[in-house]
Amino acid sequence: MLFCYSFRSSGKQIPETKEMTMKRVLVVYFSQTGQLKQVVDAFIRPVLESVHVRVDIERLDPLIPYPFPWPFIRFFDQFPETVHLCPTPLHPFGFDIDTKYDLIVLAYTVWFLSPSPPVTAFLKSREGQIILRGTAVITLIACRNMWLQAQEQVRHLLLQADARLLDNVVITDRGSTLKTLVTTPRWMLTGKREAFWRIFPRAGLRDEDIADMQRFGKALLPALLRGDTERNHPLLEGLKAVYVDPRLIGSEKLARRSFLIWGTLFQQAGPQGHPLRKLTALSYGIFMLLMVVTVIPVMIGFRSLIKPMRQPALEKQCRYFEAPSGSSDFRMKERS
Image (cartoon, rainbow, N blue to C red; front, side, top):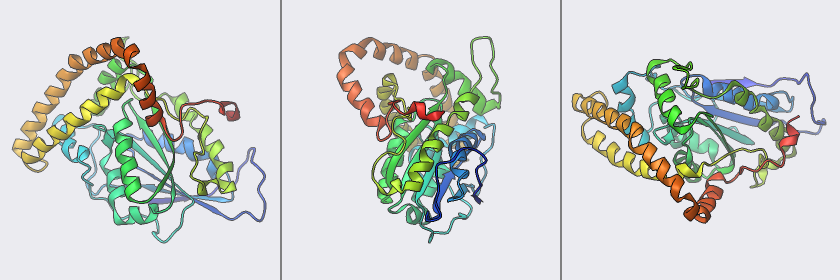
């Protein structure tokens, strides 16, 4: 479903001349809870203010809508297709594949350490690969805290589509790893997001962090108008675009390997909705909950203990996963 926007700014703008040609931006996203949509709206708002930019927004629309909140078994029944990057059927796209965009913003959430299935479907679709070919792309991720493996998969799919990844921006829940392992599943499975028991914070992103995503749009607009998207260089460097928690690198790699094995077992049990598959989903859901309260806390503590011995290797991995935009903050004064 496509929405088109082009607004005149009522605030401060960079100088624009009559000779400027209209720039075109496509924003592609799927938001189940509505939180990612808020992030996208804040990110792109400064760009919408220019009369020299047309923004088309493509909200991905699955043929079979996902429930929210999720029933327990159905939630885990999505697991194998998600981790094995099986595309879900979508309603027809609204964008014209013959349009040449100057920039595509691909916004996604992370499901089971992978991009959500609608985003995978877009990346693997004929139309998606045509529109991405040779085009500059910014990925925009909103998630709990583990996104490294999902971005690796998206990076690979973009490479297959011959797209040019210029930047990656990540916004995460500020809650601790252990607390968000409780608050996020609670939100997904019950719809309850508020703080509880005086120790668990409200699930999801903070409103002020979402609003602050406008700093990227403010930096993006002049770069877009200058034609910087034609250069294979980050546009959002120096704005604290990403932060990699070194404690989670090893955990993500290990979990990803486990997910692929379990996903294969799921698929061998039958298609989604099959009774044996539902039993497998129930078993895996219980297994995951036990892992959350036992093994994962121990792993996090152990990795913290050996961190000093692995510091050089961790720093190298952090630089890799933070690319291309990085975690530096030398342009943060430009926000005002």
